[in-house]
Image 1 (cartoon, rainbow, N blue to C red):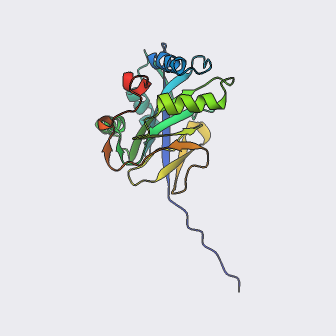
Image 2: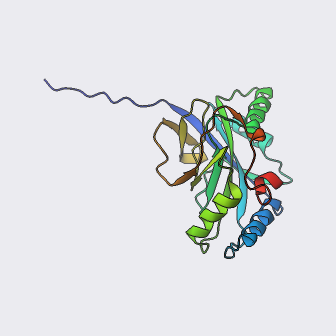
Image 3: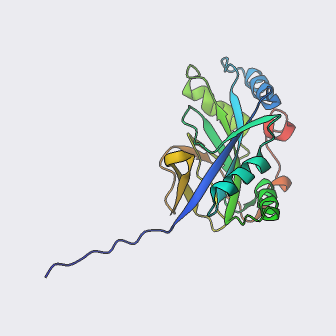
Length: 217
């Protein structure tokens, strides 16, 4: 008689991400390029920067339309539920750090009658293909990330969760994404320095305040 094997898998929930870009030139780009020049780095051109909102919930098409209207100002911004595929890095909070932007999104969504299981925020920075890898890493480490409260990854980042798990975001048909819970480290390279317990992101001191686009925006 054969022996059957049962494979235990983590539950799967719906996770979507909204990538929001400014229509007009984003002032944070000037801050990044000025910081790179101050560090004596090779020319990095003009990186593209976007804000990212991760939302985990069982959403209808109508919910998605309402959330798009909530998150994106059509006069100033362009937003998409599609997962970016261009070259870039993404920055997010370490697990346990208070994400005030995500909390505001959850509260606003509730006023629309949309209950979110989880929300998180982050930033995406895209570099031209001719910017070498070492320069990109230096820009990220020195100018973009506060290691006390943040982490980063090449490509797309996995949003932090309150329980310390990370959600692996994968593109599916129609721009929707699915979330598979995992306790394993990121497969792709990420930079992570320091651990944070329950910490308010606004109370942490950035080590690069004079040139940090996040602190000076």
